[in-house]
Image (cartoon, rainbow, N blue to C red):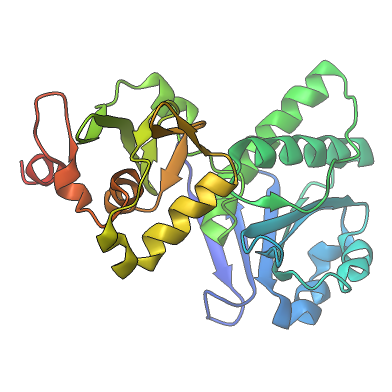
Length: 281
């Protein structure tokens, strides 16, 4: 993504309360706030415009991050219809300051955002599919640019459902492949801005070590991955069926080792240097 300057206005001085966000030289504008200030969010003049909105919280069934993505010709009127949904605790919406977003535009953006969120896999998408909309080629390209700008702003406002573990720029950049080994088990991965990404095809030990009982978080994460078929038993070990991002090298190593592990020592580069050694260079 190109570099950008972001301006955030804190309406009450508190970064957790009502705030607006704008990128320099962009017609879009975001308004964001907690559900506890729902009325104040809808008092904003921006809420009378057409736009795309996001309701974020925790899915009570899976205990995962959850998001509802919607569009409306009048954001204020549509959002009121979602008060019966109790999973969400935060609302964010985008409008265009030049009032050039049509119904077809926002329907297109909504459909694309649902696709991106499902592909990223960071959150449960509470609506199955968007309305979508076909646009002329020139309009479609304009909306893809608008979408890209939205994706720059959303993580700053705490909405990370659209953030891929590895961005396109990172995929195209030569990265240092790291390996985590235990006995004859090998896993490969890369450092990411949010932690460490273990690549599909990597292996983890089949049986947990007795010491894992002292670290219930390790057991919980492993069992959740197994339950969701992200870790599948094959030929005496567990295999990662897809890329999985962990919050830290140690969290990844612990799942691979089947017990507590120091990620700074467990992960090594092609020359055998540990992460700890690499960070001390």
